[in-house]
Image (cartoon, rainbow, N blue to C red; front, side, top):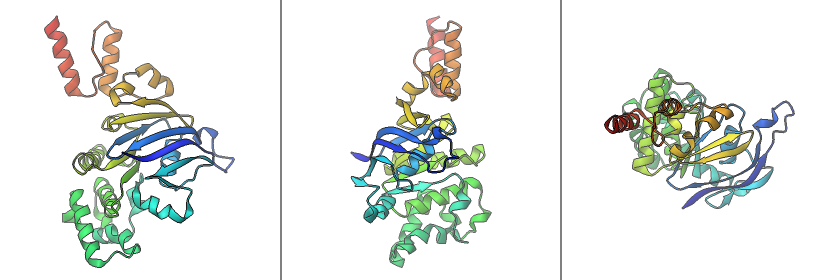
Length: 281
């Protein structure tokens, strides 16, 4: 079932100082309910602009963005759109508004006038979903970066959105924090059926998606399952992107005449393929 449809959308910044290649130019795509869509591209490719169009932070100059069949340009229903599509940004500190974790998670619900008992239930469920119930009474500034981002995710989950948009949510975290946040998102996706749209410049994060879109100069230039996209090593490098380490290794082995099949995405797949090659030889 389709939850988001983007139809021939154009967006250009009104600020003449903004580089033109940050605009979105004729993008069309769909997001299915329960899907994980990863969007990658170098800085200035338009991916962050695109994700802001998906929940009405930006409105298209032409074309249309529909969220559950609601046009984001419908001023009467923009809050319906934003309740359906929650947003997680790079810096979790920018999303913290309270001095206690559970109060921070409850903030959006209180603004909506949700009854106190229902707020309490939703806050507990959201913190449980991200593994942070033991920190409910803690001060957010005392948490690690990964923990803060998990609290930010809980704040969005408490609003019960259909989709979580994540704009490079691990960019400011160390490797353990990145893994902590991505493992949480993957569990929510797999166990709760959460629809995820992830913008990232970490290829190993993009690999977790069901589908990958590559953007360049405001347009979508590649799309497919992770193995389909990342097997096109030279094309990705021409765009200025890295590829996952095991995909790079497979590419180099082929260049030296070693017949690696497919597109190994991780160490386990590469080991399996190398064992196959050893048995054949």
